[in-house]
Image (cartoon, rainbow over all chains, first blue to last red; front, side, top):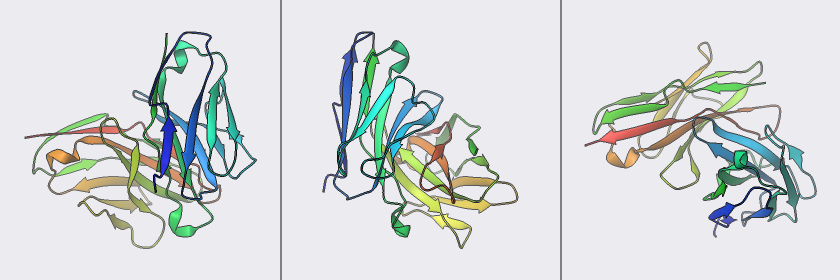
Length: 115
Length: 114
């Protein structure tokens, strides 16, 4: 039982390049999330998916797209990377349909640098 | 919209001393409250949460937090810290009515010195 996994762990891009961050969970959770973490700003929600086939914007969605490929996987795509997207990206999952498991479980993060 | 304020960005403390990390929230509706911990180079882990019932909640490693509705606070305390408690601590809120989206504070870095 790996929990939430993210790939890659590190990535360096040049301005204008594209890439996809992958996230998978093996806990059969319905909800999945993408956050970015920047110094002094805490975690900010980029996109979330309440269930397979649905996605919604969070607080900072500009410059990103997401795909909920199936119940396990939720990917984040940067179409044209910008230096302002240099950050640590975290994926999380939860199952709010189950009262006792409303906790969000986080992956280890992807450190992205855009030059 | 709800918001979370963690006024202390860093809290240095000596080992075995008590510590309090402050968290205040603003919301027009009822909320659930959480503390997450992030150890260096890792993701976040749930430390404790308040959903309902007793306003004092405890974690397995000696931390506790008390929900104070009148002061809209959820401060985290530990009577005696260890070097291993060095980490960043995030307070978060979730509106009871809107599913499971969390709003995080900016974090407090706890640095425990020997």
